[in-house]
Image (cartoon, rainbow, N blue to C red; front, side, top):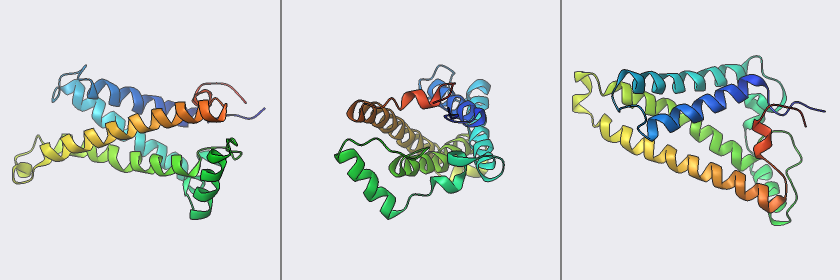
Length: 168
């Protein structure tokens, strides 16, 4: 029996997902203190996850395990083509590229949201940057969900279970 993902990885993943969803669906009023707090919390969760990945994380949770190579990407494409589940623990290399995109974009979403409150930023279209970044992250979320569900069905291997508590 092996641990799927450590608790810090799971907690940060689900906090980021829930926070982004709440703000994206405007459950909290855009610009409100709740909206801003959730946005900054999402950014903080990303920072916590990155620090954890560089310090205390083990195995597939380490950031060094999430660096895709050309060879690994080609191997993964062949695995998908032949319907062979990814054998290594952690993300496949294409998923790892998506994770890095999330980690780069989510703090930028929070920053551009935060920056809209300051007159110094009036000369920059940060509201437009925020809008486009939110839409780009929404696209990434949709691709992430489609990939997880699609690969789970295609490979007959439940990838969703990996982010739930328990062991494999």
